[in-house]
Length: 167
Image 1 (cartoon, helix red, strand yellow):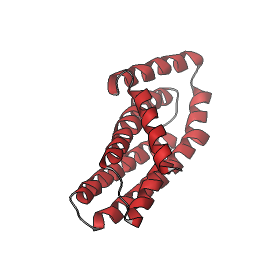
Image 2: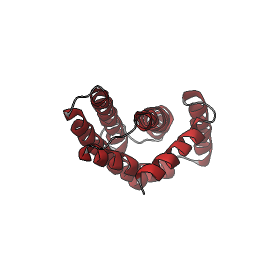
Image 3: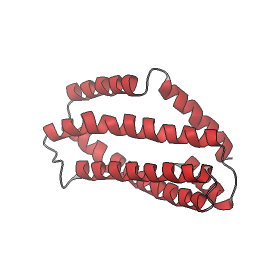
Image 4: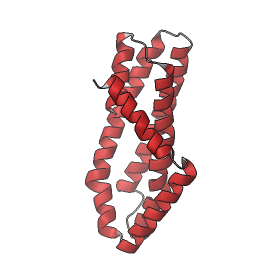
């Protein structure tokens, strides 16, 4: 998220952000954050929590699902504005920065809710056997959705982007 903020600041200053960096960031957000992390929650964790008596509507699961959808909409906005930026539209850099800041704000709050509410609730409702099954399901989803070795490649990408944007 700090890398995204730095990219947004560069857009605001009119600095160039290499297309390869933007492509890597968008791939990370689309595949790792949404398809993998949110996929694990939506396909396995939330149904397990519902089966353990946590309601979908009116509670943390519903909030998380809503925020996942908001995040997807913001990623679409970012992709669209980046495409306009790549084609030379002047306003697109500012639009990209605005959407990035909104996404960072959303994800910052989302992660805080996961850490302070959702995961604690899951820990209190799910037994060790269910935890082990979820771990296996999560590992399988990651292999199937992003492929073997891609997780590590994303970490290398984040290290490279951090070295570039956070110094």
